[in-house]
Image (cartoon, rainbow, N blue to C red):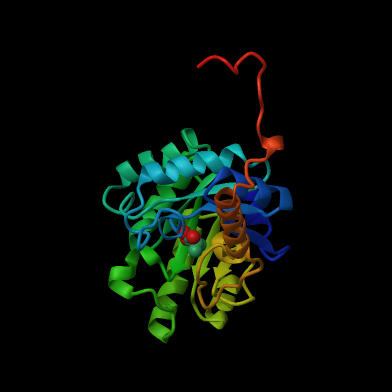
Length: 268
Ligand code: KIV
């Protein structure tokens, strides 16, 4: 799958996207036929034990992206550029985004967008780095906006629509819309030719994305707009407890998990 294939799905067939942070999960996502594997900076909260996405580094995303790319044949692999890896200097940002494609084998990068990313999107697209834009709730700005719904009044809704158009014109191949009203997401979807991929943005987007830990039930909680489709956390807890119980009770390892060699009985 390439960025242009995702772009071509706009208005044609629903796009499926999930976060992926490791090879085994990415392999399953790929086997099932999910279109896009996003190596989200949500890895900070979900897997790295940070309180937010802000501490996540370029190296952490690169290493996770490489693992996901190694396990993926069909899904488009998107590396989520972490806080301050872009925004200060476009030249440095292009180097860091390029690293995701050259070293980590990503197919595209995602940027949490604002007015400062329009020109960067144009430059990245010009040099051959496909850009997925992200508007609405952008958690890297949590110190400014909080982690709340965005686009809830006419002025901020217009700002999001304007930025969506500007990023499309700059060359973005798709747009993630996070936690915005469903009717705003519907209007943006109608206004653009590139696909919108919603998270907490209603059913009118061209596709949907969720954090995989919430979908499989690995995380302790879920965002109000998300949905658990499994109970991996419950199953992991049961398996870990069963293992600890078996060791304490002396029932593991059994004969079938051990091996003996002749001639070793009198080495000591
Ligand atoms: O990092 C992430 O998981 C994301 C999705 C919520 C779109 O950016």
